Length: 442
Image 1 (cartoon, rainbow, N blue to C red):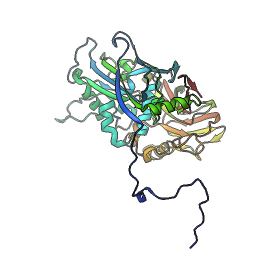
Image 2 (tube, rainbow, N blue to C red):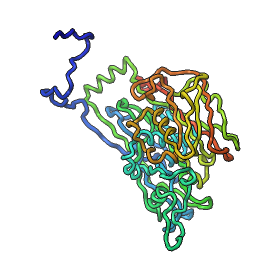
Image 3 (cartoon, rainbow, N blue to C red):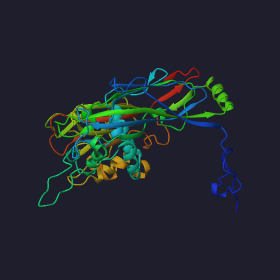
Image 4 (cartoon, rainbow, N blue to C red):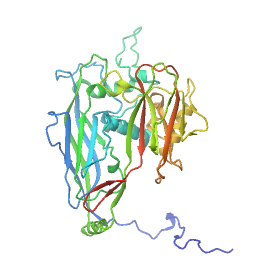
């Protein structure tokens, strides 16, 4: 038997790791300390709708992670505890719904969209897509994320949590998970949330250079957006405490010096996505409609759509801001070319094919094991992957595409008044940080 020489000189021997029986586990010597610091608001949280934080420029400490720790209660308009059987619940993702505007500024450059509740929608769908079904219990506790397990948006907005007795039997509530969310806040109980801060720059493996000042501004959301109840309810959300919990790591002085020497020559590079939320009016009574020029110019690498009530994004306690109305048929045209071989369509009683295409276009994150597995009928979004290799940029960046995008949609029934098409898009964005800690958006 003849073995040919390795074709590529720089290739390493193809020995699997289980044959490296003499190699010890590498010893970590570059990080000297990991420190967690709580940063409190710069003013009293009850004196303004806007809560501001400053993460100061810390020398020798590189930022690793940012979390938001919040303590809140649901009280009556007069400030008392609600009655035991109060029919008031929360939106399916409480941590995402708390703030209608989130602004993060690094070295004076804003990294978030200013559109009201764009942060809420982005965090909701990012968490739903990237977490496995098995994480639902911990997310319910930490972030107040408990999806409605019901067949439609109308069921998700049913707040009859204590049905009347029928023939001596008390039936279960239509929306059991809505009642579970209600039970957590009942009678003014304090709820503590520890939530991941959904800013792309903070959610990657690379540490941020030391010496960066970061400013965070959170605008409180309306109770009508956060709470689900009858229209005449007046209960309110009270924030008792809120902090930014930041984790820093301090490398050795030698490593810090090496980083600074390299920064003097080359900017640090971070891949931090930019998201954009937009809405398109649906004509009342329409069952089939086309939306031209959803994007015109630079195209996102991924986006999702859903049919929503306009009131769900405002001040309406009866509307669930995250659940969606169903779509019957969807097709996308990019530069005039069909995105799918044929329109994606669901039957009257089965959404399996549409859900499969949603997972397909989402890149089968976690092999398709997402929080939506049991809940898609209540959150029937459709996704579109516009990358060339159809990987949703999970393994590497694709070239940025330009062009036009046109959507054709058919609904199961004529559109009700004041419905809109929600479009949530992800764009590639490169952030460079200079030696002087200036931020460049590429």
